[in-house]
Length: 173
View 1: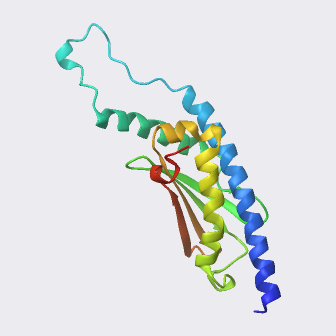
View 2: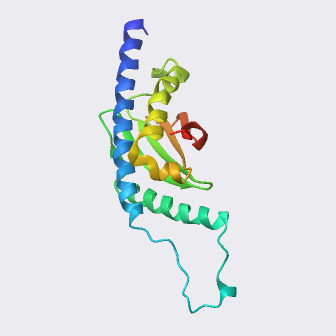
């Protein structure tokens, strides 16, 4: 493949990524609105104090898991969804330990079409990290210390790469 074709493909992929980040912001806003309507579980005052579980870190995590699972369910109602001409959001998954994962497919590319996966990942990562770190609409996820994970597959379903954004990466927002 010539350098001009590689540069053109790299530019196309960067444009795809910009579309994905924009869509991710939209999804987070939807999740924020949706999760804002959620009530944390409460216990009936008439119950014995011995039946009320103590508030623990584990219970806090469970509350977040419920919110994240519901958010993933809401996103998945619209999946698969074309983000742009190149990118499809296949689904979202809430994983244990406060991980929210988006699974994308670059529908017009096979792994052989991408000359340097690490370069593509390295080009995409700062934009995604910055969005998670600084977008006010994502504050709810930062407050819950959610790790946002973005997985990309090629058109044949072959895994290309993962971009995780951990609380340590956005901790000083």
